[in-house]
Image 1 (cartoon, rainbow, N blue to C red):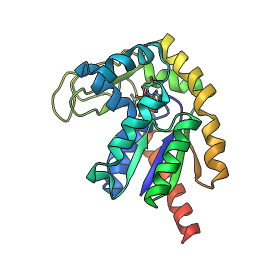
Image 2: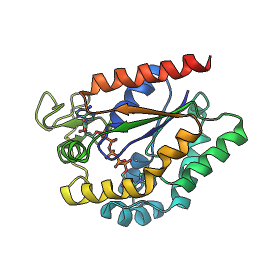
Image 3: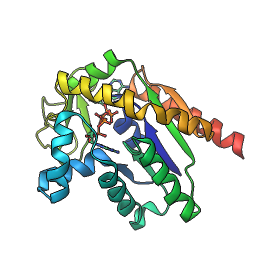
Image 4: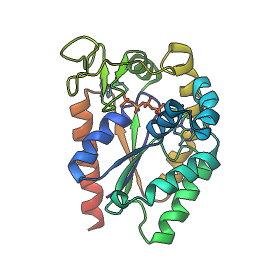
Length: 220
Ligand code: AP5
């Protein structure tokens, strides 16, 4: 199964990616997570990316495209993948389309999670992440059992530096301007599944699963 997840920051792409990856036994490829690892390790790519990420803006296409193409070459991506946060611009989508066509393995579907800006802001500004296992929590909607401690591995939870109110608003504006056009790009290709993500996460997961099943049945 080869899937792309679209949706504004805070729509729940990372949360739903984990559900889909478990269900299909495929890896989650999150460009945000890969970039944050580079930033943490201080690699040349990370140093370059950091300035863009701190401002809530996109890292240049050529940097991200090369990074994703390398990741898709890894053996675990052979059986499929969930791309979370890529593509985000039309040139990125075109590069992905070309690369997958060359392999004779096109995308199966693009799930687009829709939320209002006010919901996205509330989700982002209350998010905590485990730096070890990358699981996300929310101080109100999905708090850990012990305050600020990961349920799975006991690591202290952290807040992302781009989750403050001002940067979150900038990220939303950048999404509307540069990524929203991809909805039409994928609609024209018959791949887009629009999911109302204004519901608790299990309910959103159920909606995504139903939409995906319906699409696959229609194609069968
Ligand atoms: P990235 O890390 O991809 O961030 P994003 O797209 O802004 O998305 P988020 O991770 O913030 O949100 P999400 O939709 O995954 O929500 P989540 O599931 O965590 O990118 C960061 C930066 O990297 C970009 O700004 C850019 O600079 C750069 N970058 C990355 N990819 C790039 C690319 N392709 N090109 C160029 N630059 C790139 O959920 C959020 C919170 O809500 C959590 O606390 C969660 O517990 C909670 N939650 C989730 N679902 C629900 C629900 N249904 N109900 C209640 N709470 C919920």
